[in-house]
Length: 248
Image (cartoon, rainbow, N blue to C red; front, side, top):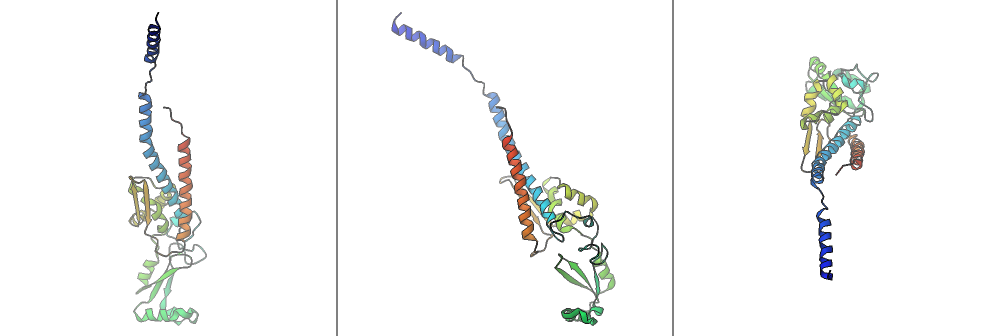
């Protein structure tokens, strides 16, 4: 056998071996495609979980009692300061302006009461915005004052953080479902004062609570605490996703 013939024979054997080496990549491609489709869905889940954590924490840290879970009085028409600090739950304080204007203890507020009397008002209702802030709403009659004294929207600041999840076809976090179940009258008002928008292109969830007046002192603390809660939740979800095993 010539060297050329021997070399050609070895080449044919090598070709034969190569011809037997095959890889079926169809399963790999299918699984890779599946993972690629799952990732956007997982990103959406992570963002929405972060949004739910933000809303729940924001509600907990929204006035009039920041830092506490939603207390039982929020499920009633409750007075801002609770028992022992004002009228019974479900009623704001009604003031007789004439009596206040005649009271020497009214101090610097007496000129204001006198001014309101001259404008035709006889009563006023104090509407608390927080434990230290509030407004005095003048009324022309006792019936008007008593009607205003009834707090229809107790807990509205907090409810507006989470009930709007239905706008993006998601169930509100558990704390808001409980609030809505006990105070169904809050749902309509909360939905009007909350804006929810999910942008699928950027995976961004925007929550706006318009129930809270501008300038409230607790807002900065609330946002810091809620952002921290959202970040921790999203990081946990991301870590769990990274540990997930896929068969390719």
